[in-house]
Length: 180
Image (tube, rainbow, N blue to C red; front, side, top):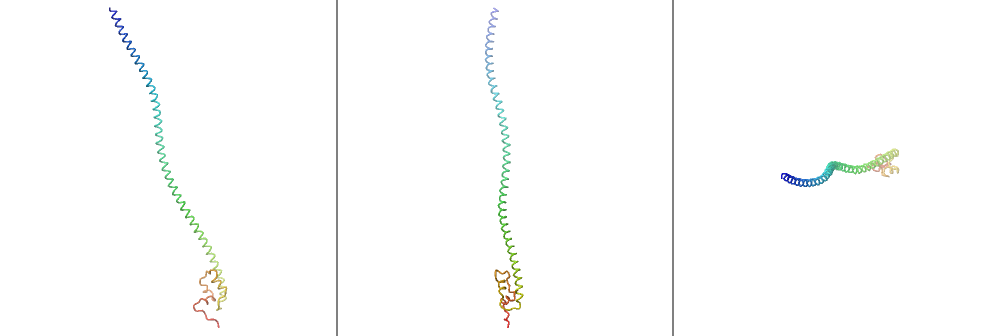
């Protein structure tokens, strides 16, 4: 009896242990399956963490690039302002240069005309003094040379008769009386 009790007890214990073992094996298999799932999730998590790190770096680089772009845009705006100012200066300086050249040409032309007029005046005065000096005693109509010198071809001397006795007689308010 005691042996039968022991056998029955052992059988119960064995069946309990067997069922527990089967349960444990099922739990182990379930845990192994869960472990496999967790391993694949851990691998995915590692990949995701690497991707996150890459994206963080890209975001940091983008922030740096945006700051750099802002600096470049500010420089470009500054350069554009300088270019527009220089273009305005070039337009103004071109017009001023053109005006300056025109004025230089006018001054040169006027200088040439002045020199030419001075030479003409000197040569006419010299000719008048020679011609008129010989006729100071004469009191009649002026000679043709004096008329041409004083009135012809735009004479530069405004009162030529004041130098010439023969012409002065024509233009004086009280002409001298004719010789007897």
